[in-house]
Every structure is written in structure tokens, then in C-alpha cells.
Length: 305
Ligand SMILES: [Zn+2]
Image 1 (cartoon, rainbow, N blue to C red):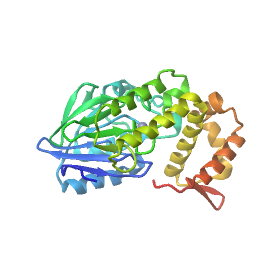
Image 2: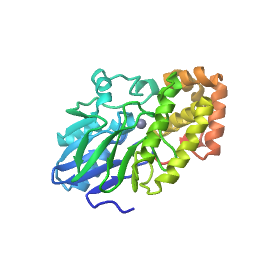
Image 3: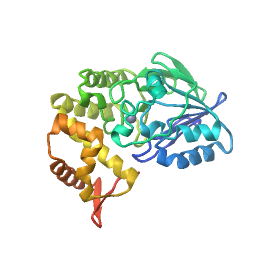
Image 4: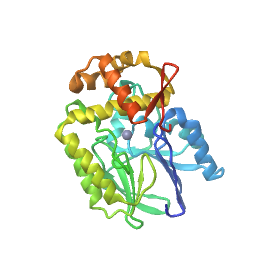
């Protein structure tokens, strides 16, 4: 995939988001820092790419655990300026474990400081390119994307992947605006004339039109029946948990589904299954999808961490 030479993408698995390193005359900047458990690896990737130079700036597309989990480690290593979307600032100030989808979903991130914020409509200079800051509500109401018109590159975060987009969390908890916002975000991408998408997860891709078509198709399914999205979300969260824990006794899954607030709430609101029935359905479905397997009575992830 041809990207300008000052842009490097560290394609990670599903526990850590991709990291985008942009080097330019204003210093080096990193977009998103991965999951906390991978922070040493993220720091090493950046260090290797910079060859001992200091990182000047860290920027987040949004503040979920897999995008900001390495912030603190990167700050400790580089004393860099840290920039977050303006809407995330109050959540980071009070470290809102529910709104940030942390403890509420059995996810973790080390607390970090930020120096400034970006808002939709701003322009930032990263890697000697001007990037428009675009609103990307849906998956996260405060998320932003970065678009460089000169190169027609979009750093999309979790608003658009090659096959899908991030779970639209607020839509599962009674928000009536989150799915329409997701649609508006996809429509705003469609208007951009994007050549290359650097997504939050998965490989860099150029066929934005086809990706948008798939995304709109999925969204339509969720608009017709939100329980489809609830089932998708529970599967995504269980695979994420397995990627972090590496294994979980199958017998422990029903209890986990009751103990973790996010899973308990989504089941209570949308699925109405006993924990045992939900566990049974989850394992069967994720096994069929080859997302998890069994090993000595444990569930193990089969997708790349
Ligand atoms: Zn996210």
C-alpha cells in the first residue's frame, strides 16, 4: 500500500488498534497508542521507527482502551504533548470508567494527562501534511477522524474499517441518536473522495467505496433490528476479553456474563437470555466463526491479539 514516506502504520491485531507514526519538520507524532497490555510493544515499535529520536506529539482519535491504553507509557518514554478530542476531555478529567467503556466492560487503561484538545473543524499539521479534524460520532460520540486532502488519506479510527466499524455503544443503552450519527459519519466519509483509508483496525485499504457499501449494509441491519447489534457487541466484547486474558474456563463464562456490567446490561435490555443460554449461544457462534476454540476445558481466542 503506497503511503507518503513520512507516514508509517503499525498494523496491530484486535486488542490494540493500529498506530500511525507521522514524521515531519515539526517533529514526530503518533496517532493512537494501543491497549495497555501491549504498551511495551507499542513503545518499542515507536522507538525502533524513530531510531532514538523523541516523539513530539501523541494524538487520539477517541479514548477507548485499545486506542489510549498505551498513552501513559508513551508519555513516560517521550514526555510528548498529548492531544485528545475535545469531547473526551471531561471524561478523561473525571476518568469515567463507564463512559470510557473501561471497568464497566472489564477493560483497563492507565490514567494519563493531556495537554490540549482537537475539535471538529480544526486543522492540525502532522508529518508535514495538513489534516482536517472531522467529527465521527457513532461508535464513540466524541470520536474524530483526520483527513489530509492533499493526499486524500483518511485516518478513520473505528468509524470505518475495511469490513465494518466499531460497536455503536450508545445505541445499546437507549440512545436514539447514535445510529443516525453513525449513518451521518459514513455519509461524511462518502463525500470526501478518499484515496487511502488508515483504519483503527485491519489493513490500510484503498477501496473506500466498497468498504462504505459494506458498512451501510451492516448499519441497515442494525437500524432494522437493534438486537442484531446487541448480539454482535456481546461477541466482540467476549473475543476482546479472551484476547486480553488469553484463556477462560468454559464453565466460568456464564458467571462472567453476569458480572461484567456491559454484558449483563446488553443481555437484560436486548437479549433476555439466561447467562447459561447466552454462554452456550456465544460459544457455538464464535466457534463456527473460528473466532475462538477450546483447549483443555478453556476457551481460547483464534484471532490475532
Ligand atoms: Zn473504539
